[in-house]
Image 1 (tube, rainbow, N blue to C red):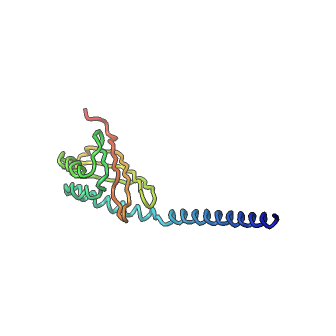
Image 2 (tube, rainbow, N blue to C red):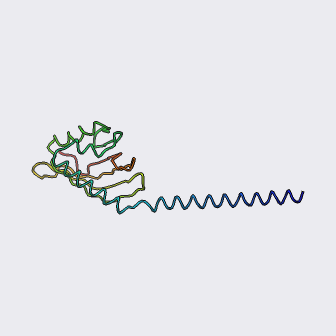
Image 3 (tube, helix red, strand yellow):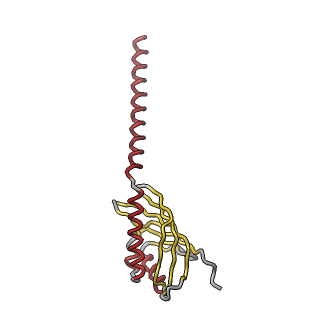
Length: 164
């Protein structure tokens, strides 16, 4: 009987040590995942894409603008219904056809991880006369799939008073 109790205690101790070791390894794995994501590189990437986006907008290229979005992405313009997927091309095309010729994007904050980056910023839209047509804020969610980052959600609002 005494031998049976000692065997059970040894097995229980061994099981407890294995659980502690496995938990410790899992925490290290989670910590190393966080350490791998480089926020500085994410900011550089977003800055470079925003520069390209601005150029494509100025060139009136709604197809190029839409190429930055995933097929299941959603775009939310102020005072409008969500624009989804392939319709994003016409959404940006409509903005360009309204006479908007210039866009300024100023990132104010980014946060995220290896799967999603959330960017917030200020947007300004100007017409052919360089007059400010709209100014507001935006939040975009970048998503990484198969090593590629694209826009998953794009939400903007206007901070200008309504036209009289």
